[in-house]
Image 1: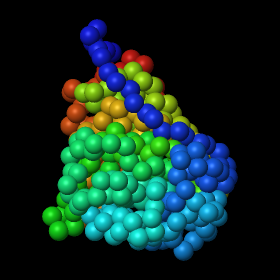
Image 2: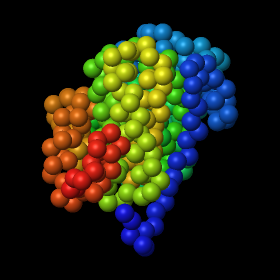
Image 3: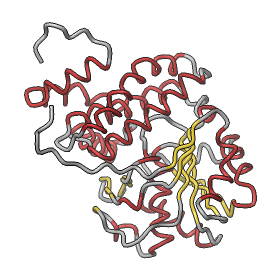
Image 4: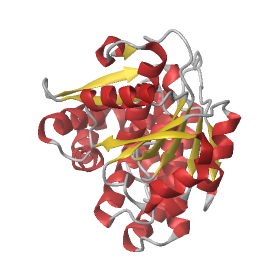
Length: 318
């Protein structure tokens, strides 16, 4: 399965706090990071609702202000507006509440609050010189795993493409996985975000940078998704299913954050930038075609995927 000369680096610095109503400890977690004036970064749809109100209450006096203008596939201009808001309130940290767009926006706001300049100055990999202001991530979807990854993807609307930022300083310092925050997610988005997590796991398993710790996380993520995604879609209030999907997304995020993704995500980001298709849904549509494209080179790895998803592969060729 692995070459005898295999070498790899595993990196996952995020403190993960899991549990129903764990969000009530947001103020305590932020304080543990040495921060006292947080900019809460969230989606337009969430900003006026009860989830953000819960997080704001938990932060208490540590909340300096709210930036609630994040949209799906967040854009360069949104990040720069958020950074301006953070500077105006004297923020020394960011708390993201929402899906991947909110978390990626907060990551890049943290960059601008720390380093200044324009967002495009930091496009690429390992462009940052020092640690950023602390970031506490509070996902409200179970898909992107952005709470534990070192990448952010931001849309350049004018160029109709997505900009990729990758740096170990982008990894959030802490994350709160609270299933009570995900019960209101509609079935279609629950399915789409769940398939994003599944694609992360599948692609991490057959990446050229695959390694045994990432494999273990990806395979267990797929087992959890097999068992709990149908229930999360069918029964939105099922806290067990919601919680297990949050764990699956986090595991898959850790897996691909170390092993990387592949052609599914490369195509999905392009489709999303040009045609505004939901990212997880685009992944789900593209996944079977990309598996067929890769099958000759990756058949033995896809066997592991099939087994994790409950298929009986005894006696079958790769």
